[in-house]
Length: 212
Image (cartoon, rainbow, N blue to C red; front, side, top):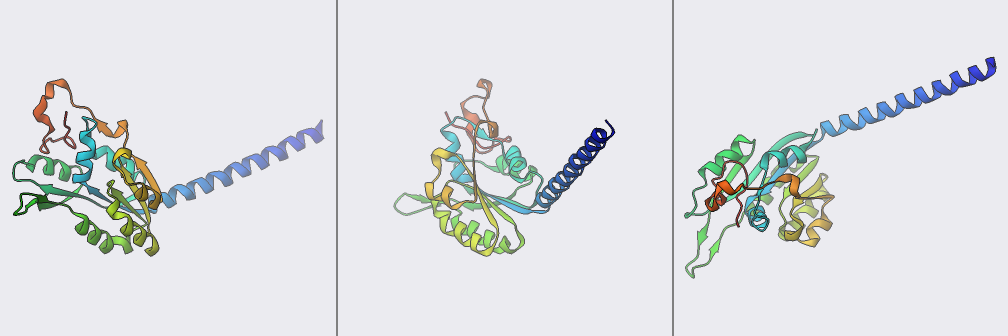
């Protein structure tokens, strides 16, 4: 009986020691995550048109919390194209209050009546200026034009994560990312019937506009 008791005590000590080792490893893993430096770059124009098909608005605050997690946020940047027909002051103010730096560019009208407005080059420049300070680059867009940029960033060192609507995302963009997070219902805000049809303008103070 004494021998069995000693064996039980020894086995219990082994289990306790292994549990401590595992907990230390988990703590080191958690500490590593908390030390990771991350920046998020949001292609508002791209996400806006993708969200319209769901008659919902993106929750920018929740997006930031989910993407960053326990990691260290270095910058959160949102790129907005302004149209003269739509007042976006309130929308931009909301983004700033949620912790985003907002970059703005006016929609350019061509002589043939077409319009051009995107932040592809500006976003690429900002990412490359910050890349040496980051462990993770998070791009919120489904635009396949960013594939070459993502591959370049990965050769420099940081991991690349993409957050986007699946239906509006280029396949090669998903394949190029180290991690792809689809925007699902938990990141969306559904407008109430009381809001009315005019609540889908970019000056909505809660998140991305929706469209019936």
